[in-house]
Image (cartoon, rainbow, N blue to C red):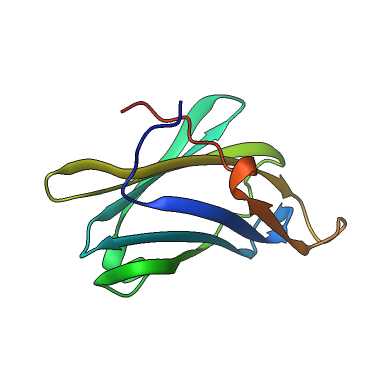
Length: 135
């Protein structure tokens, strides 16, 4: 369901990938727009079940005002050591004063236990980032 959004997402970088329980992970979203502020609502799903939600001030995640052109939204998170391994979906909705959604994106990521698997960065282009949020 691709609609018109004020923010156009160009790609997502997950580092490390897969994410490791109990270790820091960085989700970096490359996008373009011209906005002065707003909020980012992050929701996490595990096997389709909603398991976590948090809200952040957009200007705490990137510098504001965001001028016309490209910008990067980066969020660091340490997942609890007891986080079960598997495939997860992250959905992020960006909104602001008077605008219900600047953008809404969704992408999958993997969590593993320990460093037994490769911990390399994974870049996803815009076609691998799903615009499947309801308006």
